[in-house]
Every structure is written in C-alpha cells, then in structure tokens.
Length: 360
Ligand code: GAL
Image 1 (cartoon, rainbow, N blue to C red):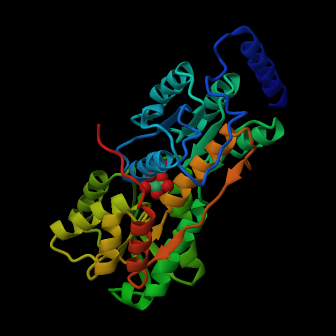
Image 2: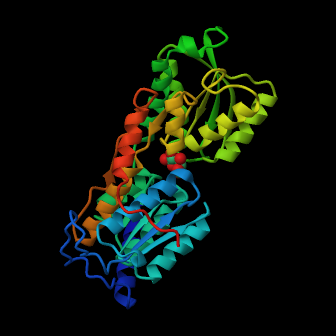
Image 3: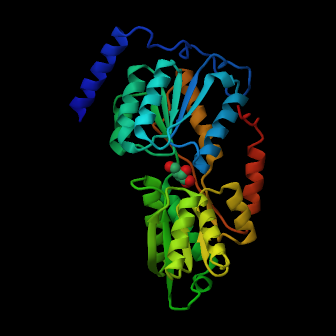
C-alpha cells in the first residue's frame, strides 16, 4: 500500500509540474483570514461542495447551513458551487473533476461511498486543492495516508456508535415496562436501516440493540430492512410488515426521515404512534422534534448539523489560510426526549439566525 501511495504521490508531483493552470487563482497561502467578521477576505475564493444526494433531508439541512455560514463569513454566493450526486459514484467522480476544472480553491465532499474516496483524494491532491470530507467517514487506511503524507485532507463528523447507544438509552430511560406492551418480557421490534455498507447505519443498528441487550432487555427482531434514509421507503416497509401481522412494540429507525415515514404507516394502519407502537429516530429534523415534543416519537438523537457544517467550513478556511487541520474533527450527538425537545428547538432556532439561501 505504501509503495502504491508513494507512486501516487510521485505521479501527483509530475502532474503538478507538467500541467499548467492547476494552481488556484486565489492565493490562499497569503490570505489574511479573519473568521470572526464578514470583511470578505474570501470574496474571491471559490468553494466546491459535493453532496451524495441533495434530496436527503439531513444533508439538505447540512448543505444549506454551510452555504449560510459561508455567506455570513463573506463568501460570495457566486463562488459557492453546490452539486448533488444523486447517490451515484460515477456522477460524483465527474463532479469532482468538474470542480477541479473550475479551479475551486477548496472542496467539501460528502462521498457517495467509501470506495471512491481514494480517487477523490488523488484528484484533490494532484491539483493542490485542500479537501474536507463530511458525514460519511472514509476508511481508517485512507485517513492514515492523510496523516502519513501530511495531506491537506480532513474529515468532519460524529461517531455513529454514540448515536446508536443514545437511541438505546432513550428507550431504557423511557421504561422497558411501558414499552413491553404485551408483557412477555421481551421487546418485539422492527429495525429500519439507513443504507447498505454505510457506517452510520451499521453502527446505529448494532449499538442501539446491544445497548438494550446489555441492560438485560431481551430483544426480539421481527423485521430488519433497508429504507435508504428515506421517508417513503420506510413507510412502505412498515406498512408491509404491519399488513403481514408482524406486531412490533418498538420501531428503531436509523434516521428521522424514516421515523416520520414509519409514523405515517402506523397511523394508516389505524394505530397510534407513541401508544400502540413506539418509534425512535436520529437527526432531530425540525418535524421530528415536534413529534418528540408531542409524544408521537419516543425520542431522537440530535445529529448536530449546525456544528458539523460550521466545523467543515472552519476547516476549509484554515486550509485557505495556509494552516493545517487535524485529520479527524469530531462532534457530539445529543439525546432528545420529550423533556428537552423544546430546548433543542430553541437552540436550533437561535443558531440558524444566519442569512438563508435564496432558491435560485
Ligand atoms: C446520517 C444521517 C442520515 C443521512 C445519512 C447520509 O448521518 O443521520 O439522515 O443523512 O447521514 O449518509
């Protein structure tokens, strides 16, 4: 692997020397960056943002907040390019090429999957473009290359194990006796997973259940399916399960979009979420927070897109200023139940006071 990477670096250097026009227009090494005010030291800097799928509810909030924050810091909207990759790795690779051709000064990428990360890193490094990955963590091997070769590449995200543990704890805190509606000493449950081979989905699935089991609760899985982080897909899965007579007490969803779809399916089966079946999500989407407040959802886990989007932009700014970043920039999840949902709603309200992006 090391030899392969050294060869890659040699090739990169050759490309940098041979190809003219690879260096950026904006001289970020000399930029006098002041992140506290909007005196627009970045007005000429161009930033390329690539999101695995723009109609993902959570990533849409995340990318909007990055744009708002960039604009509040003095970036010109015209210099912020946001591309959605329709969950297609070929599309994403060609979009990264497009951003390179457009000579962006820094890239923020939410990869479609871990297997294309190495190609994206190669393109960025070969063209001297600093790179911030978000939300979908690259492999440990990839991250160790950034460290070993001192590349201007980093990752911003939370540890999904924590969100799984918190989801399990939300149920424990609620009270297993209340959840065990049929009083058989076990929790019958559905698991609605995010996406195949996705770290967040894998860890949330595993750790939510193991947290409950480690607390001595017998878990009885009736159905485990992939909902692709999507409300409509989750709704179909749950509707099918209920129509087949699989009666769950609890439905654990890897995210809130799927929890909201689950709630719809429960209602359409003439059952009451939060009474006949308990549902939990992750993300703290605004609609989900209202449901937690009203008791429709038992809880959610705040996946703090505000701090993550700001950290990603701050890391990009440091690169623009010619400074280094740690190669892993973490964040904390927060458990949300009916007691603190209102606080989180208020917190999000005050934090989103930055200018909103216009729909062009
Ligand atoms: C997760 C988030 C999901 C979805 C996913 C995409 O962190 O909770 O809602 O956006 O990322 O990879």
